[in-house]
Length: 175
Image (cartoon, rainbow, N blue to C red; front, top):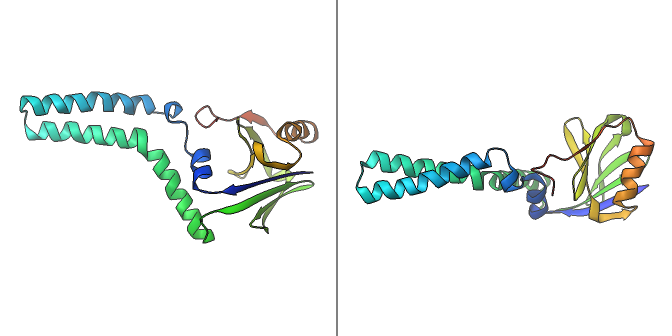
């Protein structure tokens, strides 16, 4: 039997759901637009170009900066605020008990029970495991096993549940 416990809060949620900025898809494109748009706007202002050109350059720069640097963390914050409103809590203790079934507890109360036949995939990142169930994930923090440990859990999964496909996390989330 394995047991994993952690406190879900905004920082953990943002860390787990917002990709590494420099590895996110499209980051280089938005960075390039920002790096082109800002000097272009400065040159247009210095040369006294038409207001419409200056406005367009600033708008492109603003949109590129927002989309490239701010969008993903802000989106993760919004998702967490919605979860917090649903549970009427700013943080909660999550406990996952793994034995004949997988049980998810939130603040000590059983929230969900999953049969092994429902698990579609095991995904491993540097700091967590995901058990994919119907397009959603049960996440296990590698550092917070209270019974068992991350290495023995991975060994258990490969030996006792070889029918569950294993894969590594996408590079933009693998931290």
